[in-house]
Length: 156
Image 1 (cartoon, one colour):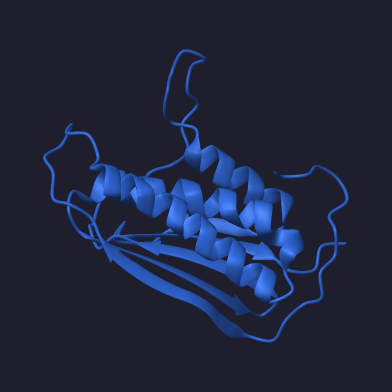
Image 2 (cartoon, one colour):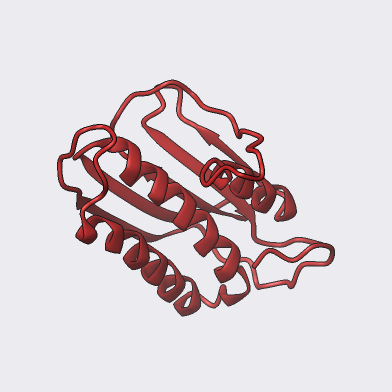
């Protein structure tokens, strides 16, 4: 859960790779529902993120990082149509960087302002809010095949 206002401080860590994991998803046509096993991959990425951050002593970032991972991996799984999805977590220059790559070039999207009745369309708004709260940033690669989010490790 993202907290507003003062953020808990964790000890900044040295630059390091924390997690690099990829998985295949079942090929499907646009509009066809996700295979159950593919939906389970999102939960597995959340679990791996939580585990690696706790092991690194960064437990105060777990909730925000897990939310970002959940949103970015879900988008990649839904829009890649049977491709490999890769998640990497790295520490660099005082930031936790979350990168999700689905290998599918696409147009660069921006967060939408969904209506109250809309069932989808809030994920990138959540990512943007978490990044702002953690004095970080987020973005999409020039070719649209990767989405990333950086969260500052020391917030005062």
